[in-house]
Image (cartoon, rainbow, N blue to C red; front, side):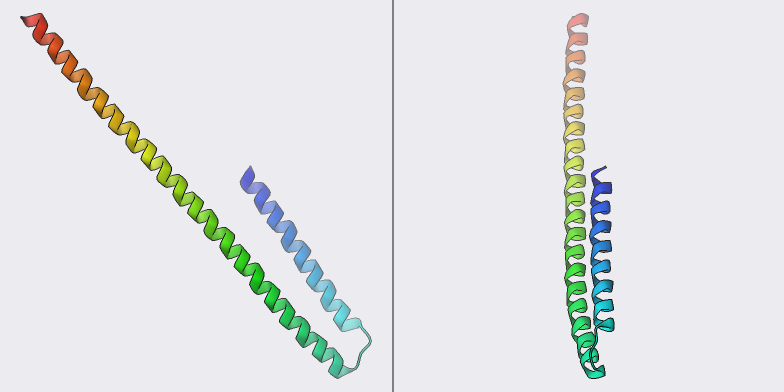
Length: 109
């Protein structure tokens, strides 16, 4: 469930960002200005968009890497728990086996 809300938040942020970019592009294109001024605005806007897109990609990469690391840690923790449980089970088996053998020897004597 937590995963789903994280994805929903990401979708909302992405939709908001894309909406803002489209709105800004429309404002640049429809604003009254000369051709050279409009081209300069488009160039500046494109540079800004590329920078923001790079930042967004960096953020996403960081979050994905963090999620992968947390997943690896969770798997490692579970493996250690299972290993400990197996070792405890083996030790209990050996102790019980020795107890039964002692009881059998006592009964034969």
